[in-house]
Image (cartoon, rainbow over all chains, first blue to last red; front, side, top):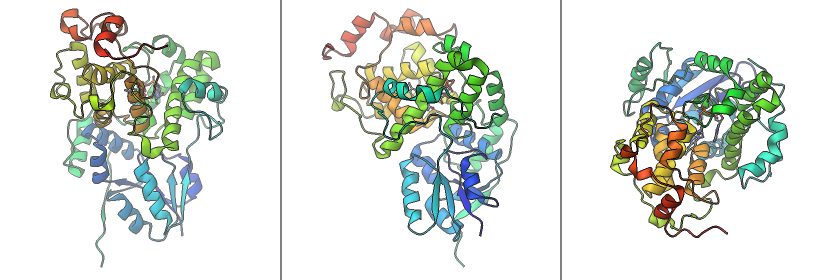
Length: 142
Length: 268
Ligand SMILES: Cc1cc2nc3c(=O)[nH]c(=O)nc-3n(C[C@H](O)[C@H](O)[C@H](O)COP(=O)(O)OP(=O)(O)OC[C@H]3O[C@@H](n4cnc5c(N)ncnc54)[C@H](O)[C@@H]3O)c2cc1C
């Protein structure tokens, strides 16, 4: 059975590494969750911007409550999800992991530094990250 | 038969943002406001990338009319990676001339890392205020005149107006508004940050909240504030920087610091 991708608001493009990880034939979905948007306080402007990005993606768009919808729509499929710092999404992912096979996939990084790098002030971080930041990756150029 | 907990919809490409707004209103009738003239249009994004000029960016980026990219809403929603923009900038300008631009991209990476490390603390003060005030001295609500862009300080009202109508303002304007709300109006940074997240197309809890904390001094050594001369220096003729229309922010840094932070201890 092919996999399913939950493409959330942090990853609205069709060449996110999550697509490769999920393999061919995976169905990608976006969830238009009014309760979530309202909780975040998004104005119409923001929703229009998201809507317009979605119009450029060839994915399934569903309107409903995120966690409930993921549960029922996955219907036993493995789930692939772009990594996100969003605590609400992380919580949903934790819950899904109890019943489903879930893989989170990080995006292409800007800099490669140890995970425990000093983050107390930006310029300390910059000193550690500068070399990597100024080294172009071998990723595709449009 | 169980009831489906969802409906499907197909977003359509439109030629005008108000057409998208009509479609969004049909999905989410509760949503407030108008559409922005800045569109979620990938072709426009490609045009910006084609015109990217890291050297003129580094020379002019502090000016409200400078060569900044307005790519932030695309980057925020993952439609564009920092990696991709960096590669393009270095290809175009070379490492040396692209460095300032790449450093700005790295700010986003830095805030995201902090967020990933402590996702549940994004609304908490990282450190204590260094303003001489305690959190209780700051208001829990945004004053009505700020919400209505009628503070009586002309340039602040123009920045508020732009934020609320377009959802994007220049970094310097964000700094001015955040400082005005935190220090002149003595409102909690969390309240101002929430207001920004409602309106910004690039609204991001990490970049936004941690920048607010940098201004507030709960994530820096001292509060950030500005004066009218600074606004006049960095803005063009479209921003009203006349003294009579901006008295509240006029004055020397020393005089303003005494007024805004009367209990602040001098730094040793
Ligand atoms: C109070 C305050 C609130 C802010 N809120 C947000 C926010 O919610 N979302 C957001 O993306 N940025 C935020 N910023 C950071 C910065 O102002 C914007 O990223 C920038 O102005 C976006 O415009 P641009 O795309 O033309 O940036 P450019 O100057 O062209 O920079 C290119 C890209 O680099 C990144 N970048 C540049 N400067 C910064 C910075 N200081 N911090 C983080 N990323 C940066 C952005 O992704 C930006 O698109 C905030 C800054 C302040 C002072």
